[in-house]
Each structure stands twice: as structure tokens, then as C-alpha cells.
Length: 140
Length: 147
Image 1 (cartoon, helix red, strand yellow):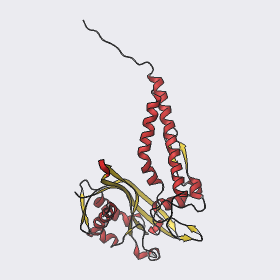
Image 2 (tube, rainbow over the protein chains, first blue to last red):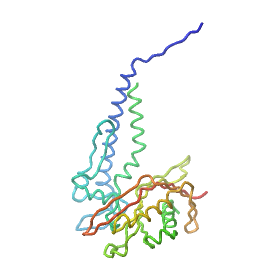
Image 3 (cartoon, one colour):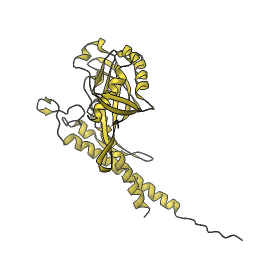
Image 4 (cartoon, chains in turn cyan, purple):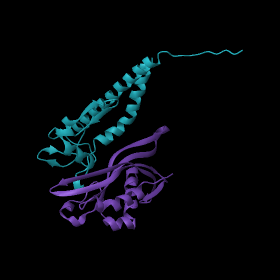
């Protein structure tokens, strides 16, 4: 004769919904934090590039300096349909400005002042920590 | 000597000492940007630029630095279409994307480097009436002082 014990967690669909919602919230929260970090890199910290008509530009390799606010105002974050979130710079208010600063100007004439790439790199461990915490909190 | 000196030496030595690549773009490899006035002379193209994008140090107990993890954009730039730079881009990737650790020595200091392409990169755009064709990749580079 054998005996068995069945363990059935009937709340799996409910838990899945709760965790999915928490993860999506954490993704958007991380994207918002990343966008804010990009704004702060532009508006704070010393810039050591050339001075043009009173404007202190950034040096190669530094985060861009704020000038006409186009790049600064282009920074944002949105949830992605179906899951995930996006932090961005550029778009309609500063399409070429953002690309040229991130990758250098066409022809290799002006060196890059990367903003999105280094900030995204810094946020990799923050993203993992935020998701991990969100899952832990959701299943308590 | 710091790891980024080793990183720059890795690119300079890999990309300037290869005869096939020199045949494609002579010695026109620049860190950050091309020299001022280059764009006024079409014969100065194609050229290559490598650019530091991001980096972080990986530490062990006692704040011992094990290696530096960095991202570089490496791009080949031409003015006559992508066909002009395809061979240089292909050769560059073969030289940089390495399965084995590459030893690099600069000013008597030895470094070890591991490099691979993390994503391809391409752009074509017009500046001051000139069309530029740029292709390459974002390369992940792990560099450490040799033990």
C-alpha cells in the first residue's frame, strides 16, 4: 500500500497576476529613475568643454551640458505595451542633437558626449534589484 | 598605469598594426574625433574613430580592482557609400571580437584584454552638404593589469 500527499496551490493564477503587475510597476519605476538620472547628469556636475557665447559646453566623454533645453526636455519614460518600460532621450524635440551627442557628429568631426549608454549601464544592477524586490513584496 | 590606457592601446595596436586594415584606411585611426579640418578634405576618408562610452570597475575584497568593464564605439566612416567601408568594418570586427585573451603592452606595462561586439552600429547622415556613411559596433572590453 502506498500513501501520497498532494500539494496543490490553488492561488497560482492570482499570484501570477499580482507578480506580473508588480514587475510591470517596477519596470516603469526603473525607467522613470533612469530618465531622472539622465536629467541630473545634464543639469548638474561640472562641465569642462569650450565656452561658446557664455555657454559652458561639455568636454568629450562628459554628459552633455544644458543649452537650449531641447535635449533635457526630450527625456522621458513610458510603459511598453505588453510589458516593459522605456526611458528615452531625443525624439521630436532633439532628434539630431541626441544622436550626435550620444555617438559623435557625422564624419567624426565632434566627439561623443554619451548620456543614455552610460546611464543604462549604471542602471543594470538597479533594475535587477528593483525587480527582485518587487517580486519579493508581491508574494509576501 | 590605468586600465583605460591599456584599453586605448588595445585598439591602437590591434587596428594600426594590421596590413589589411591599413590598406583600407591608411593610418587614419583616431580616439574620440578626427583632427579639425579633416572634413574639408575628401581624401582623408575613410577613417576610423574609437570612442569610450561607459565603464565601471569590478572589485574584490579589500577594494582590489580585478578588471575594468567598458564599452567603446568603434566606427568606420566613409563618404562614398557603405560599399567603400565594408571591408574595413569586417576586418576591424575580426581583429577586435576575440575569443581569447589578448595581451597588450604599453610603456612597459602589461595588460590583458577580452573584447567582443555587443551590438552592431550604423548611421548615414548629411552634415554641411556632405553625406557620411558610418558603420561599426559597440564593443565590450574587459581590461586588467596583467598579474
